[in-house]
Image 1 (spheres, rainbow, N blue to C red):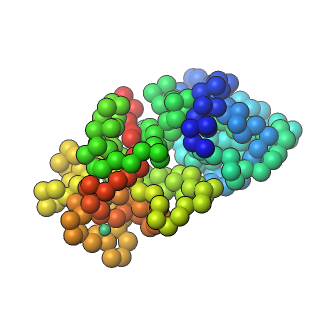
Image 2: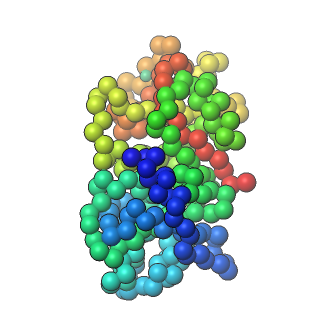
Length: 244
Ligand SMILES: [Ca+2]
């Protein structure tokens, strides 16, 4: 499903742009969502009818806005806090169109997702299974870094995205996804790769469980809260880069 989605996204083209005092937010229309609608992860329904351009500006002005649905038949504009990644839970709705916000340093056409409040750009890889060292090398090979989660705001955005991403999938218990973050405990203290201590954590009760678990994953089973895990276990990958 993901690879098909990305191919469709590449074929789309930016239709709306803003200028002046607004951030350089532009919007990519994802035609795979034409005449479909998703009414979750809502930020706001703009009061009164809006033109498409006004809807776009309404989103760009709201830093938390990642994407929007626009309904041409009644000029309705609805802002969303995540970038939807599949249509499995969309409903049919004639005249509905879907747009994702991007900036030049973070392009949805190659599968990246922009989170403007922290000026960070993510890409999710769910078909790869790497141990920690290979995950670090994989992201560095793409001139990116393995995911860091230094605060609750960023973690919350990732959780919201991942919960939606997996909503449409049947996931057997044995295949619950997990994503390494870049922190490790190899020196006896949990550190980020730049050797700064990990301050924000979100381990549920019973974790960290420690034994030979020097790396950390966001675990589907825990709704993407933290779990210490062996560094040689295999994980899906989230790479990221910050605004240059
Ligand atoms: Ca553990």
